[in-house]
Length: 439
Ligand code: SAH
Ligand code: SF4
Ligand code: F3S
Image (cartoon, rainbow, N blue to C red):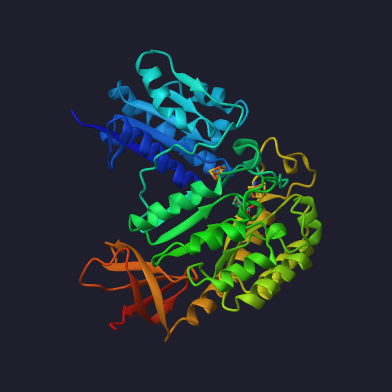
């Protein structure tokens, strides 16, 4: 009889890629993917704890599984990811959801296969969280689900300890994979027909820091040198480590997309300092200037937080003015969420919810206006789009420009994975609508 798995993913691209690794492990044990959780023999929740709502989302879903598990006693329920890795959380989860069979963390994801076998021979739940990040798991064989894009981890963990952020606590210290392994993986993926490689790390710019391996710009260059037509992306860049050398490498290589995600978080120097970001507003603007000097049409995207402890109305207005000044192509906006164990959680002057709500609304309005304005600039132009998917509801194909703008278009045949020239006829906020241009 066929056995099925179902994975729910809650977090960032790294979390998404780890779900592909989990899928790889489950496929190795003979499981197949299924669409509906009701059909699964094993259900995995790959959690995130970056903000309270990510955490609550997972709790809600795990809670909803209680009834199904009561009916299907042999179904295995496993919970992993960043949430379980927080100190004491595995025990809390076990108490709250005693029907969960396996709880694992971010550092022992590659042992999931063993944990499943252990559970099958054991009545009691298997709860194993590895405190020590150990070595990186290079041996995983992900079952990729994001064609034509493929994710490649280049670093794990983070050393930056931004005062609001839980990531360094649940991902451990920064460690880099060896460049030969990364380049070999990229080569093999391109050989397999992948058309876009996205390098992943919490701070890709500090790749190989403290080792004798090549620098991040050099790594990009070597991957861009691989033969074939493909796009190369990377995230996330920390502004403090963003270098002129990197801007030059982007400029010199057509394959490296003119699209950089450079999270600024705030436009106020006082807030940036309290956030422990280790750059000022002026430093950030300087980096943007350097980037634009070499790559004038580079689309810059960012992350912004409002309501950080102590953020005054003036501080917030500094964020608004920075957003106006840089003209981000798009931005992710977040309300500060208190994370237990971080430095900011102990700060006085936590901002009342209604103040944060008002600020996020004002910020989103500005960011959206910017995005709309930038989308309009594509109208009338012919843009190269890498087709990523088909939208059944809209009956349209979709893909992105190298700048990261989403475009929708019609096609009589399946063009997923193809590079197409699309003439943009209209713009609708963040996305574009156009027609394929035949050459
Ligand atoms: N390593 C990446 C970001 C990882 S988290 C970087 O430094 O850019 C992604 C984004 O989540 C962050 O950029 C930040 O804007 C947001 N974030 C992190 N912790 C948060 C918190 N406690 N509350 C609200 N947003 C947060
Ligand atoms: Fe979090 Fe800062 Fe590290 Fe990004 S760089 S993961 S925001 S601590
Ligand atoms: Fe990613 Fe969430 Fe962990 S954003 S690193 S899955 S806390």
